[in-house]
Image 1 (tube, rainbow, N blue to C red):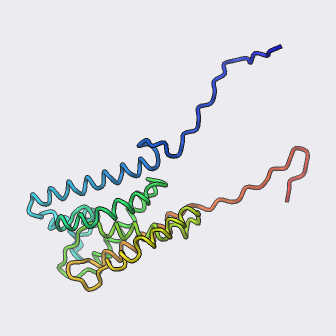
Image 2: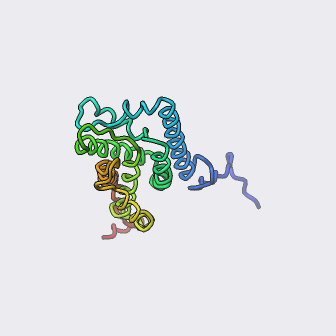
Image 3: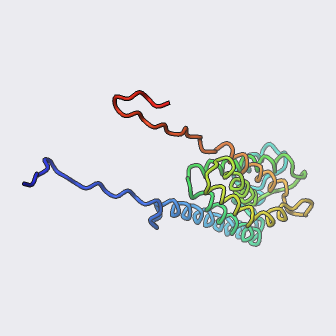
Length: 223
């Protein structure tokens, strides 16, 4: 004898995969966002070149000039020349992509911290009458964030990523800070690094308490 179930029966839809190759997946969102950032940087560079580098004068951070505080927001999008942009493009995309994969919202908040802390460092400590532009502060911020994220989050995968970032970029970043090198803002690089590390601490994942086993019905709670 067969028993017919009452009511309509519809199988539950399969749970979406973490990465199904679509642009809505974590990898897809991170890649799309960083491609959009690079496209914007190239667009700004085109406008800057056609305007005889006028955007440097308009959007560059002028040290200790109160009227230039607003330029902290705009200066990462402007570069001194084509070589400046191409030098930043690869590490910006690769480090930014790795940082953005877990959570785009967290990544955006990290960018805000790096831009503000890095920009203030440039504004406060750069030489008088200097103009500072470029996304290298963001690059150093991403590096510092990824370097520390594994330690503060204590997730095994983030620890492995932190080790990989240190091995792959540590030597390069140390020699790119530019202490004492003309036309290189070591202040921006160092402040961006500090901003990224600060963001890793401020935006760390909350600790979750370990789950306790529920007592079977009719028995006293365990523990």
